[in-house]
Image (tube, rainbow, N blue to C red):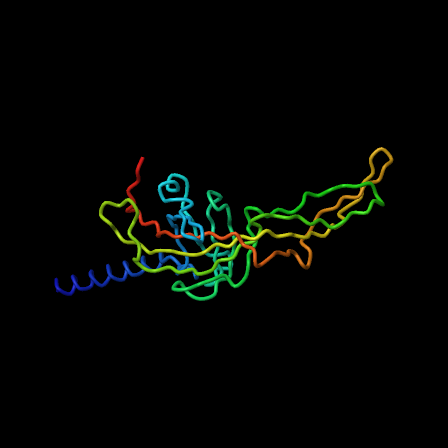
Length: 228
């Protein structure tokens, strides 16, 4: 009888534990193979170091994460406005062993829509074209390799996943259409209020003239030992 009671208690505890596991299970992002928080270096395409780890760790890490749509190939690359100053949502081709963006993406940290304007009624309002350096970005030659990097400045030489990619920046001309919002009168003068919306052909750029940088580094692990 005691043995039977013991078995029933064990079964009950096991069922309870399994139930708790299911209740608190965390759903994995669809872009998990690309997602991470990365310590990084920046070099030019000739291999000359532009920004080292030791200059970046106090400020920020580079982030890669899924979009709101949570698609496996739709990934944000975000340096949090620190060095390269870009945040873009890319559609990626390939997998973590070799990937590139399918096209250029808007740099959300540089992009802005012209401010609304008001003019005397009857005044012609033209569309607005804004030239933005670093306005568009593409990713090429990307790869993430499991346990291929040594955690920088870690005395125990712990390993972490490595990341490498080339970020290509383009000067872009963005075109916005002027759209009439409303009309009002002030001291007997009538005014029209306009806002700007992206044109059907929103941007143009020279695809042969990027300014390119190499980003390389490793996934943040918690084993990093910092230098003051």
